[in-house]
Image (cartoon, rainbow, N blue to C red; front, side):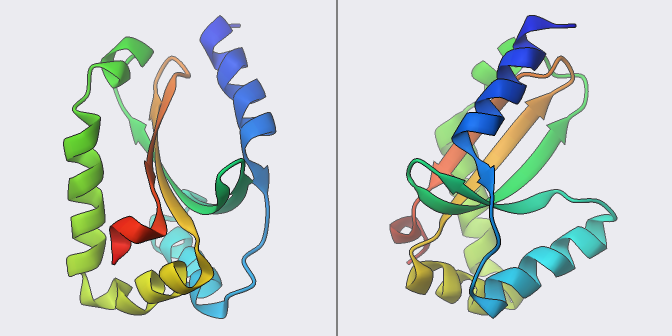
Length: 125
């Protein structure tokens, strides 16, 4: 088994415990997003930095090294701007800010590597 895969499993166990959102808007958004995707790609997790909605994005053909070379600041800004400009996400974003819930975009490579792009509620205002 690949060492980086094992490390990512261990980190995900310790860094993000599964949780359930108490806010109905956040819960409904997560359920709808996963229903549309046909799989669980959006989760709600407890992290050392507070609760977070985590969007998992599998990157086909990418390695862990490829993820590290990605322009993370630009990707995070584009992701947050995309959410903010989507009128269907307005209520969800307001709930995140109100509940002080973070957003994490977790990029996952084919070899089990991962990179997390963290956006606190202040970035959503």
